[in-house]
Length: 199
Image (cartoon, rainbow, N blue to C red; front, side):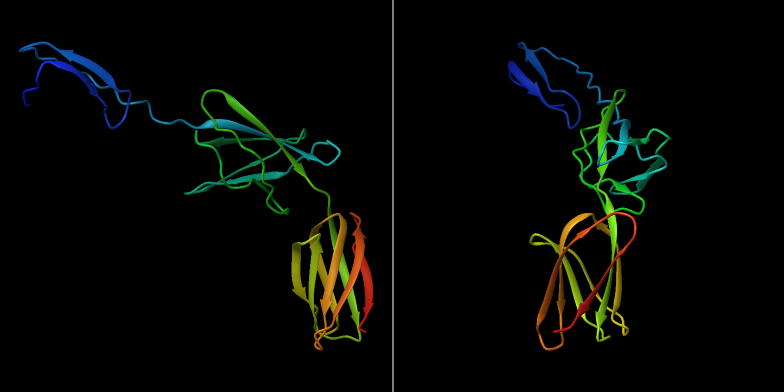
């Protein structure tokens, strides 16, 4: 070790809290630096509900971590528990069969648990029948946001599942570059069939 002039020194270890030491003339001091405890996993309790607040039982909830995916199945009350690292989760939580849902996930610090509510929007399916039958590009919008893009088959048919329920705008582009647009409201449950006559 080297010699230090008398005075006050601040010692900052690579891990752990800094310490302030005061040295007198010719004085030697020995410091015991304690590393911080390793990060522990904490509990994230996810309550899965639908738009009216009813629990969604048996929902498979997953969280994408940098090195792995954690999953848990909700109980009859729509509650699933994930063991997550102490850092906040930046990726959206996902439920099997649904589009990813982004919720604000607080930092999970052991031993306390954190709770979040995951509201699943109602979903609907859309069936299109284009006549005369041909393969055409189809886009579905809500406002200016694109929800889906696909192509009808050779029979002019297209089925899109897992779209959000509510008002949407369907735009079909013909080979001549003409856009045929229809506004409709998607219900949940049975798919909606809309014959579109090409103009």
